[in-house]
Image 1 (cartoon, rainbow, N blue to C red):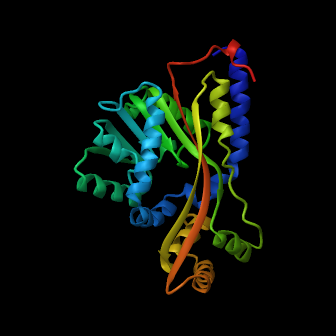
Image 2 (image 1 turned 30 degrees about the horizontal axis):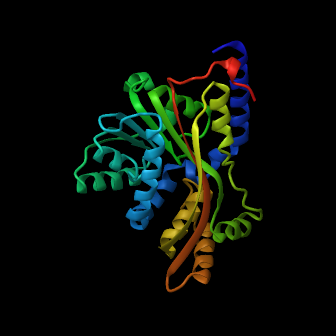
Image 3 (image 1 turned 90 degrees about the vertical axis):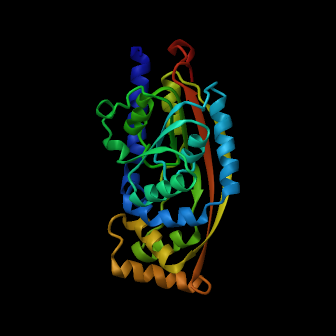
Length: 293
């Protein structure tokens, strides 16, 4: 990496860190949040919707020329296995890592049920020692999909350095949460709910300035989930408070709101997400002289 490229990348990395520093305080960066979400993920899983999404992602990955059958794959923030399981079925050797015990429990149950081998690791990605784990340049494909595990230059570099060839990353362009989040944040904290920085431009520009031109696809999806009042109370509380989800006053306020706006002990959550998917081959890097803004 020449001096100009290195300076550009470092300045952008500094901007990325500054732009997202407040995101770390959000519940979605805590394992307790994902533990609370795990049962909902498993229950609300739509095989048809998942199949369509998986096909889109795998088709995008295949544009790099990578053969998935026999590939060594690392799935960071694997969750309940929406990519790990289909990849294993295609013959990939998959390592799935997540810091949520609840998510990994569901992944293991699904892998056992569908009789596919997946190596499962419970660990926070930002604490990974690539050399100690034998991960450095060890995977044909590394996936970081819609996960807070890969959310800044440090964790992004870890993802890049684990791959010897292809990386796939996806993240929100924008997300509109259910109305309950906005109403309850104002009620509980007397302030507007500020959405986290979802800008896909942050990792995209970081890659571009290093000489990578990823293939990118932008999509939009809407979600409508039925959940119990108790489940939704825990999810919203953990989203706002992280590990402090047992605050009785907060949970009482949330529950009261959900009962008022729910039906027969159920709450119907709606959200809209715009997200981007991008894939690049580490072996295809453009010379810095050609990489102009």
